[in-house]
Image 1: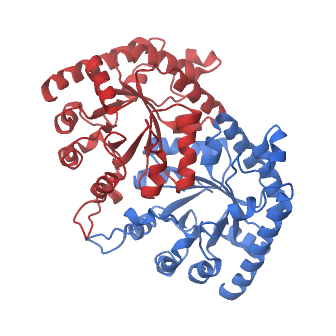
Image 2: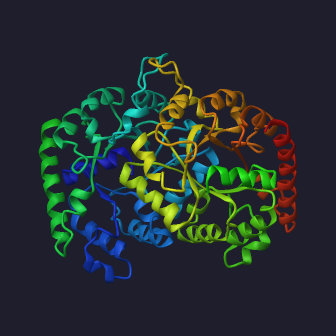
Image 3: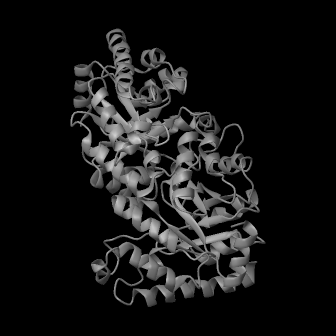
Length: 271
Length: 271
């Protein structure tokens, strides 16, 4: 999917919602546990209930790895089930030496057909570029939503005066354009979003942390939107665990719809 | 396995060799491809041939993920096959927000019984500490062996004058002691090893990059060894792909033996 196609979907659905499929076998409704594949059954029903309101889906791979090869099968079935028009993100935060990153790319782009993958920047250019396949996207960690983001990401360079996360943006802009690279910027970092937007005017930002982690959708949109929207705002627990009961499908649908309606207003205001 | 137990194994085998099980279905000898599980068959034979000379084994998870759920099964069988006295490393370079890192810990410490896991530091403390389970080890990326290590790891802090990788060591020493944390320092960084050893006198270093990536074992040992050895030096391609033919077992054994013999001399010299 190209950046233009993604923006078309955003305009069509009046939404920049990404649904996080952080599917935990201990949290899904109990009545699903009798199914052959409770994880996939849950995901299938969530996708069906929310696809009208979401432009993207983001399974966090840890949730599937925690269940071994069975979890990997559930993930594969989920990826195969995604509607063709949605943008799919393997939230894997991978990164290794060149030939090894190339194998991670194989896992998520060949073995499974994700559109994009989140990548950690610590090992630098040759750990990131193997993911830059034609038609695929790298979503590079820049300034994350968790408390530990302050440990290293805010370190100021003696030589350039820039913070580490700013150096990550500056350097990575030389590795790929805004048509192949996005950045992870936590919703809890809304105060920094304007600055980050100035450094990366054209790039899409994947913004986790709205909802359970405390980020505010309006603040994020006001500071982060650009002329192609440029935002994919993720919500996971607020949608998929809004109910732990048999009505979880309707509840998920309603929560996704509420977010989409708010996003429609924000697109009208800030786009 | 405790640090003392690991040092006991090093003294017993007169070796600090870690065998990297970077098992690529396209590179293993063709005669294995007719087996039900060629990957596991290869690993099994490599383990049997080299366990006399190695104190640790390190599968790089990317190689298994690239084969989907079948690869994950081969990995599980490999982990179950490791002899009980070896130190096992999931080379996964994982890291995410707290509850997600906890699920990665579940994948590698509960679902599979690895002793340790490599972790990327970019997201800071709360992305690392969930891996610090009783009896388990975090092996934190510090200064890696690849060219891209220069992109961010050498950035100098305006406030402390330290490089980013030094800040990673300084901060992480507060999160866990040398009985639960190790550091990844590339063999190609031997020039920096003395300095890094000064910053972390008691910690074990996992040292990849001897062999195919160009690192020198003697240099690494001279600059990096401490009074408990403090080094796990990894070799993968130099051992497991020393031959692509039916004699691969004997060749692997010989290469591992050569490294162990050199390590014996280096232990005599530098310990």
